[in-house]
Length: 279
Image (cartoon, rainbow, N blue to C red; front, top):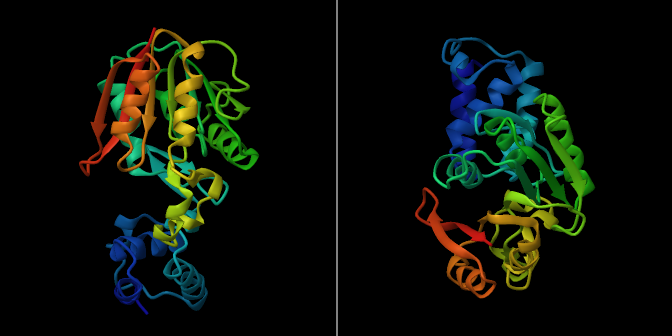
């Protein structure tokens, strides 16, 4: 089979399996197997694949068709212009979280943050992206999962940022010392009772990275309560939220004496982010 024929047949299979962006998935997997870029595939449509290449591709296509995340199969994910290692130890970074980083850099008055803590760092994508954006900042990244922290450290090493970010095991801010200009968090925000609504692909993420309790916002509320002693006067708390959580959490921030509270939508029009200052 030629590259073009393989792309066509794989795309058709993914469509039948109701995989989002079937052609894009096919291109990524075939480029991965052939050790080239997606764009280079278009220059080699007539190239014939050998049986070893086809066998490797078939196995990846089978796993993708069963809902295994593309990023796990490739072993990497692009986030804010950098390539991060990605596997089952932490949640696959989402485009919405890239938006959160972009908002912090562009729109939230965060020009010269001296100390930043990323709570629930997972694979480390927020902390390491902020390290590239704020080269003078001192950055701490915490997670409750040893597996996630190991992956985050590997990403820091790969990006030559190991000396820029301190990784720490902590339940929210329990083991964190000092005060910060920015506390940023993309915490689990899915209600345990909503498990049945999730796709097989999402369920490949660790439960600890997805589910927060019966309501879904329990961990975010806990962080809102813990954050004030760790924020410098006027310091910023930045949160990524689940769908439908913004209004209630905005009210909770008000109750806890935060000010300059604002909600921002993601590119889909969902109220996805909350920003608030304290002191």
